[in-house]
Amino acid sequence: MDDVEQSVLLTNFTCKKRRFKVFFHQLKIIWDTEKPPFHQVTVPIQNVIAVKQNFLPVSHPLDDPSIDPNNFTIHYAEKGRNKTWEYKSITFRHSDPIQVVSWVKTLQNHLETFTNRPKKMLLFVNPFGGKRSAMQIYEKEAKPLFILANIDVTVNVSQRKDQIKDFVTYHNLDMFDSVACVGGDGTVSELFNGLVIRECRMKGIDMNDHSQALPKPSLPVGIIPGGSTDTIAYCLHGTKDTQTAVLHIIFGDTLGLDLVSVYDTTRLLRLYASVLSYGYLGDVAYHSDRHRWMGPRRYEYSGLKKILMNKGYKGEIAVLSVESGSEGEEGSSSKCFESCSTCLESSCDDVSIKKDGCNWKTLNGKYFMVSGANISCACDRSPNGIAPFCHVGDGHLYLVLVHHTSLLNILRLLLRMSSKRGKIDDLPFIEMHKGKEFRFKSLEGHSRWNCDGEVESETDIHAIVRCQLLSVYSRGNPIPADDETTKCCGLCKN
Image (cartoon, rainbow, N blue to C red; front, top):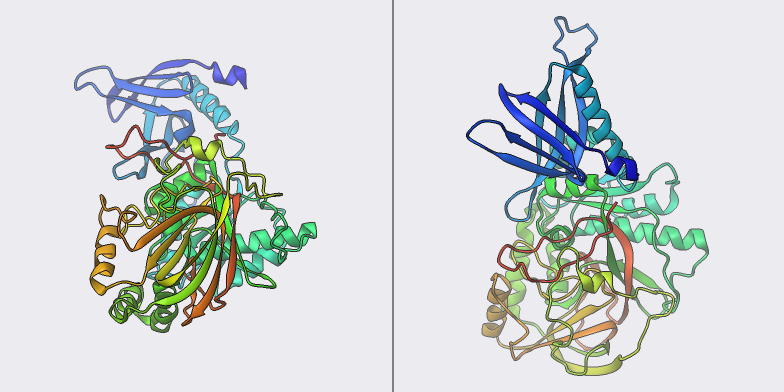
């Protein structure tokens, strides 16, 4: 490895009739033009997807193509605007084939040291989620890049609810080194629920015992957004751009993502990654399911109806809180971005959930909405999310309580959530509690729980954070250009 890292190359190449000086040194490829207009590009080797020699044109369709010994192409990714990554390529030519072979072999040897990059992937496609475009997303945006990166992908198209969960729970996955999905938050939820249940079955762990540690799945998970809101992908990558998500899978870097296990009195109901919400969002999820023919518009339709009804639900809540006050201010001054020290330094021993400095609080009231946010829950329509300071891998959730209030106040809340600069924690009818687990008991009126977009009808629940239970392909949410001093969320490099 040390010998590979110390490789140094310097050659003059041509590209589209222009001469370039091309360097490879300290794990970076640099090329610049020899004559004006001067232009220099630097590509770290970890951003390179593949390096390949090209083929000569054939004179007849039945002829076998042969390699062109005088040129090669570097396929790489570059950060674009709005937190996206873009695929790019450049082809260099040289009259000496030895120079070409030297560059190709050297760069390919470096890429082979990235052992965390997936090689054999099982990928699930949900053709019914969001705008029903998941298969087109895979064929047009994911498949060509996976082929380029030499990833052997086995595609499984789901045909019914819970098919993905059932498949990964009961089928042999030993031949795969990774799993991924194209779909919305519900599709992602099916995948990781099945993976955790699978591990429990294999290791003889009673998943219905909330005092038991849940085993971490051995396979990392790739998430390609193809749903309506794609909150999980948005919080991990900072965007729901599909090419960005595909490139993050190819890079092979992973983050530890917290999951939250939800129980009733006797069993595990499910795990979630984004939010568990009772009241307004639970009602919207339940009633919008009747209007799936409307596509994503069904949420707007059902949401407007539920806002106008402005229904409240009485409940008793107990939260294992990690701060002394009820405002959730302590330890919440930084947001979660790439290389986040909060997530990197988190102690995630799930065997015994550490309760040092934590206290149980009991709350009673009538609520418009009760939400246990495991991540910020940001999305295109809510850039900061319901819990802006929630981290993806610190072992905590934010319990956001919206007291039953006037219709005008509810509209104030929705307007602030849709604003890039909006804050909701200073609204007088909002409470926030940072904690490790919470319990809810319905007292009067019964709603349903919205669990990562899926409806859960059991009202009385117990939710426990499982710190970094899932490894997901991501380099984290990039730091905004106007917030370069903000701490950010961690990655495990190759």
